[in-house]
Amino acid sequence: MTISTGEKLPEANLVQMGDDGPAPVSLADKTKGRKVVLFAVPGAFTPTCHSAHMPSFIRTKEQFQGKGVDEIICVSVNDPFVMQAWGEATGADKAGITLLADADSSFTTAIGMNFDAPPAGLLARSKRYAMLVEDGTVTVLNEEEAPGVCEVSAGESLLSAM
Image 1 (cartoon, rainbow, N blue to C red):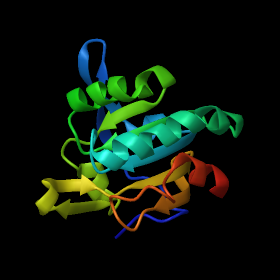
Image 2 (image 1 turned 30 degrees about the vertical axis):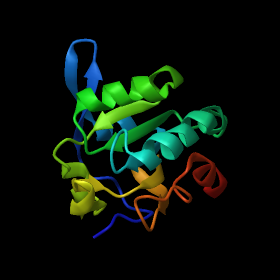
Image 3 (image 1 turned 30 degrees about the horizontal axis):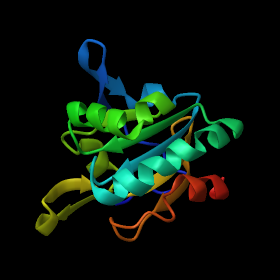
């Protein structure tokens, strides 16, 4: 079942590349007592994710901060090495976007956002979505109908929904 507004995020440990290599990150710790934007992409470096979705959050980061958002987090079913390289390639790292790897798709599956697209070589990937999470609870959820589209999950659309 897909997570809905009003529901708490499940406990999850994702992975972030740090100065000393990959390190576990508790999503509960990231969201406790904070206002966080969490958006997910089917895959780092994939066309829509790279050219539309990530840039929309880089463009709107200051506007989210103006609305009290403490952090913008991008999640993808990739390994932390790929996420680090993608952050550098897009400028997300310099913009202050946090990139977290859900390498085994456990978080993505737990919130019902997993899908497979074998013809594209995408297995156990995340649907494209953006959500506002306040103190661990989803308050806004914008899910795309198709993985190659970035409209309702773009930074501008989430800002409008807040």
